[in-house]
Length: 236
Image (cartoon, rainbow, N blue to C red):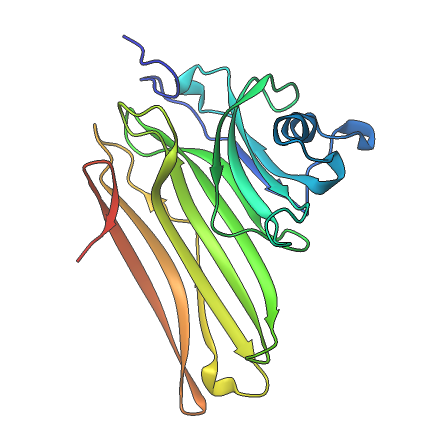
């Protein structure tokens, strides 16, 4: 018996969407997702950027889709907000917003390395995999700071709303004036073990750097999380 919504038993392939820096409709027209968000949020289309779109796995047989959007209209203290949207309909013709989840990282300027894809996390469960990066200049620390979010957002069995089932935010800070404060962590896409009846593990590999005096100490580390009840938790 097929599960409703985002769950199914037939194998499929993920669809990945990238943005550099944003998606536009054909011929330079306003993206249909931007129009939908403007109506739903009482916002101006010019303040909405569609960063990426993606569709469910083939095994899900779902008619919906998803989008990453940024709303930058100054309503939140001048800071932009990024949302993961689950949509009724495909990105080229969305009907309505089924769910909206605010994300903790949002690029304020040109978006770099944005990714959105649908990922299997077990034989019967899926989640949206998101990558977002925010860069800013830290005037107090006299350096450049970047934050990179990798996150998995899904609906554990029995739940009606999407939420974070795993996240990792890495921060890199580089200062010319005081390099002793420099730190860095850059992580590749997570490796998700998805062949079992239930989710099991997710691992992410990161290159890290800290300063020991005037010399950098670099390392490669792997951080593993295990599925516990309804989300991934860091492995001891």
